[in-house]
Length: 291
Image (cartoon, rainbow, N blue to C red; front, top):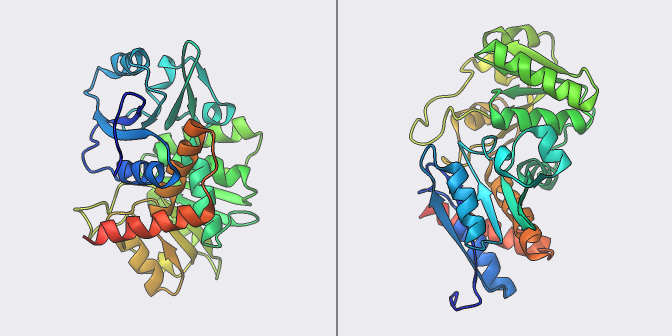
């Protein structure tokens, strides 16, 4: 049980909505197990109040914050500094207090990388399909392109958005491997027996709309070598189910959630969370989702 006293450091998650976040469970459990006198709370920030929230948190001496939708890009103008990787990605999910303001980091990308490594999945020397060109899709495109993927096909309903993100990632990494495509043109990729690592980065299939997925065509899933869905609620999305029914492994986003939180925790506390502690936390998250 966390004992709150005059030396307790307060951290939080700013976003809208934040009511269903699992981040407090992760951070407060890690804090208790590792003996850090801190507490982590969700902080709902209304539209138009982001600048006030960041300034207020700094004024209240909060050592760090997480940032979730819809503010991962919007928060950048209110930072004193930004990590080079987060700047290239164009999104921030972790703030660390510095002299004069907060410095922004992106632990989503490194969290996904660690999750994929833990599951034995790699984008290196692989053709990748990313479903969705929102903020998460942009981060995944950057991860795969910087991680040695052969080709990264960025599919989105709005082709213009996919084109813009592909240009930004290709320019930032001095490559041409990211290829934008309208989502409806996915059949162009299904020639022969070619197979892809597919990463689902849209919100389609998120609870309660569990019977939906970005591509319903079962033929598509016969070309998936491994499927990663950034959604973790429900535990098995329709995208994952169709991938598994076609004979390929499929994973959800819970380990990414875990590892992005672990890396934020390490930044805030200047410590190292052991892999044993991280996987123990993963078991607790799984148990929490089953309740």
